[in-house]
Length: 171
Image 1 (spheres, one colour):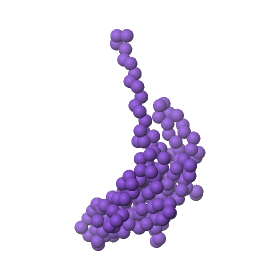
Image 2 (cartoon, helix red, strand yellow):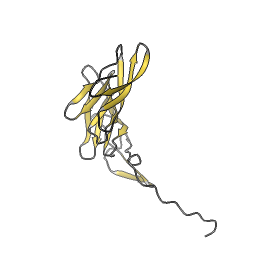
Image 3 (spheres, one colour):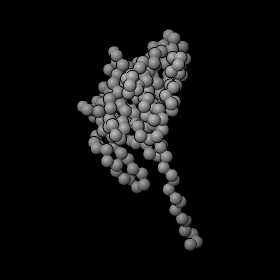
Image 4 (cartoon, helix red, strand yellow):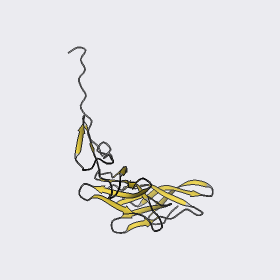
């Protein structure tokens, strides 16, 4: 009809559109429809009162972030089949937060205390170290295949970006 606009078809869903948002205190993992979008509340770690998602794997099946009580938080890895898992903290640290995950969800990166980490189920947490003269570091993202990590390191010259290739260490 003249003057009437046809609705455009809904866009195809992508991993980014399927991103799972964390909703603290909502319990359960049942999706709740909101118009055409749906949100899935993820649980908190035992004893916690909040959770916050920071990254989702490229295949959309793994979510990472942090959960706990205000001031004391641990990095987590969540999957539909495995649920919420506490990644833990590096020795000497009291908190951690995950900020990146590989394409298939098997490698997680972030910060624990004042150090960047890489986590795998088989190897646990691995301290990625510091740039020369560095005081603190944090990992921000990991490559799809998990062979490279990027992040920041504070040094006497200021905050510097780093790239950590598994074969050579922090550079």
